[in-house]
Amino acid sequence: MSETEEKGADDPEIDRINLRISEQFLDVVDETWRERGFNSRSEFIRYAMREAVKHPEGAGFWKDMAVSEAEFEMGEGVDSEEVKERYDLQNI
Image (cartoon, rainbow, N blue to C red; front, side, top):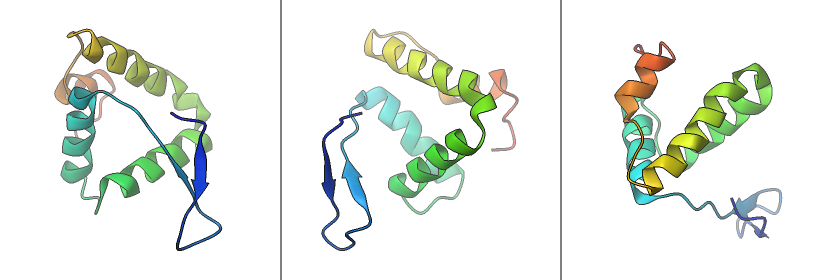
């Protein structure tokens, strides 16, 4: 995630951030937000970030997601179904 932030043009209370992830991981993110009924990628990412802050005990999940991102970049990793199974998220 880039530390460079710029103020939103429409709302001075909202900052825009730049997030760099692999295309393969972005495909998983896009699949996930659509399956879970979010209206947009941004809405899903904001939700995920709020949940990570509100529930830090789930940090292991987010750490594993970061590791998966690195593995995707190296041509390895797991797909979203395997992540769901590992964390018992089949109803998501």
